[in-house]
Length: 112
Image (cartoon, rainbow, N blue to C red):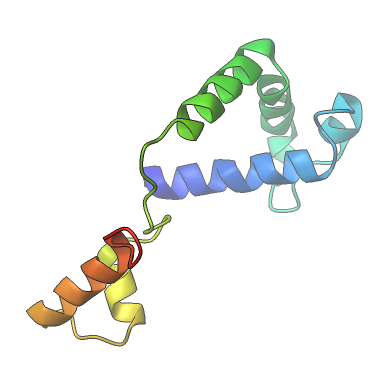
């Protein structure tokens, strides 16, 4: 449920940025995400206020800076290794296939 909620918040925040909510708060508040119901207007306005607050902007800048200092990047993105394994068309009971999937997602042919 946590992953679903995080994905939903990301979808809403992306929409907020796409409609220019960072520049025009009033317009963003008047244009809620199409998936939201009319009775959720107050929730949308609260989220718009949150995303435009100084505290949120500081948190966002801090996290962006921390991510830029990572020594290594995950090649898995937001998909689990078993999910990549299934996408490769492998059977989950295949141990050798799982090793190859892990190697494909975590090893770089240039750097080892």
